[in-house]
Every structure is written in C-alpha cells, then in structure tokens.
Image 1 (tube, rainbow, N blue to C red):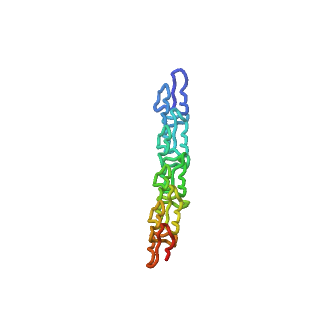
Image 2 (tube, helix red, strand yellow):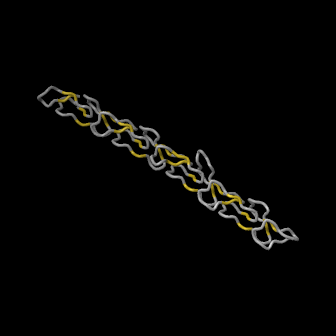
Image 3 (cartoon, rainbow, N blue to C red):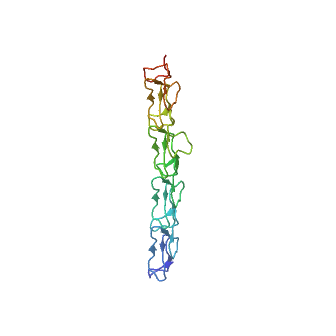
Length: 212
C-alpha cells in the first residue's frame, strides 16, 4: 500500500498503481484491464462490459455496438449480424431471421417488403424474380413463390401481378404465357388455358374467347 525511497516517510501509491508487499521503494503500475484507487495493495479486474488502459483508476463502459469480457484492455466490435444495443454489454445478440444489423451494430432492423434474411444477417436479401415478400413489421425470413396465374418479373417484389385474360402461368412464374391457337382464357389469374368447345375455333394466340 505504501512505499518509500529511503529518504522520506512512506507514501500511498497513486491511483492506478499498487504495492503488494512491505518495504517497497516503488509502486507497480496496474496492467490494462485492471484498476486501483489511492493506496492500493492490489489491482482489481474490470468486469465484463468494461475496459481500462494501463495505470487506470476506473473502468470505462464499452459503447453500444461493442462488448468485452472481464479484464479487457479494449472493447471488441460485435460480429457481423449481431448487436449490442446498450453501453456496457458483455455479449452481442444475434439478429433474428427477418432482420439485419445496422451499420453501427446497435439495433436489428426489419427487412423491407421484397426482401428477407436468415438468422445473423448483416444485410437483407432481395427476393428473386417469381417470388415476393409482403409488408411485415417483423420482417420476412423467406420469400414466397407467386401462385399459379400470377407472376413477377422483377427482384425485390412485395406482391405478384395477375395474368390477364388470354394468358396463364404456373407457380414462381416470371411471366405469363399466351394461350395457344385453339385455346382461350376468359378469366384472369388462371393456371391453364381452356380448349375451344366443339363447334368453335380460335386461330390466334392470347385470346379470351373462341369464335363460331
């Protein structure tokens, strides 16, 4: 706790230093990740979520977006797709599916409509053509295939478009297919074309009716 250079009375070690035994002529610096107050015999380890430089008298909280374990000399940034939303964190939390970590790694942000993400994502992924994801406050973890009779020809779609009369489509379609000659579709959003009834015909494609 105290030291002397042999010429003056014993003095208390300054904060950030220690004297672990009697009869010392100098105090020892506390190493990074530990601290002491005036007159300390030992240095105390900074708790998880805190850090300190060498010869420190107090520990400092890690900022949001970073973390530390006990005895840390510096704080570590959260890994990709994880966050620390408050100061003094000892662990980072993985963002759930449907969300991604912001650039500061302080919050998980819901994916916009037309996008999705898996657990631990650092960015949301655009839905591919033929699929969509709707508006969802919690974000979307998957994209949904467009149903029969609908399509989308663009990525990051939030909904599918309806196939017009005279056309059709299967699932996950990126375009509608025209009905062939001899067939028709008089309704929208159909999965197949109808054959012209007996006694009627259609010589053109993409038609909504047959002639007699």
